[in-house]
Length: 60
Image (cartoon, rainbow, N blue to C red; front, side):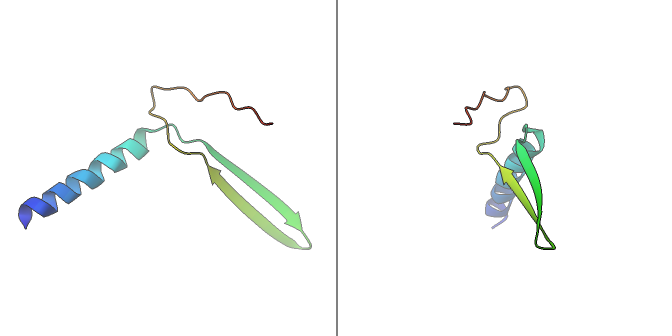
């Protein structure tokens, strides 16, 4: 049981470190319409390692 628990924690730690060190590409938008505000958060996947640069995107 201890072996399985430590393996699961190691798995979680590796992924959390990856997300903490990744270059996150987040786009936040805010729109007001009819007296209401809509917030939208978009995150492109996959996250890039900190050593890689973001590829050029073609908007069309």
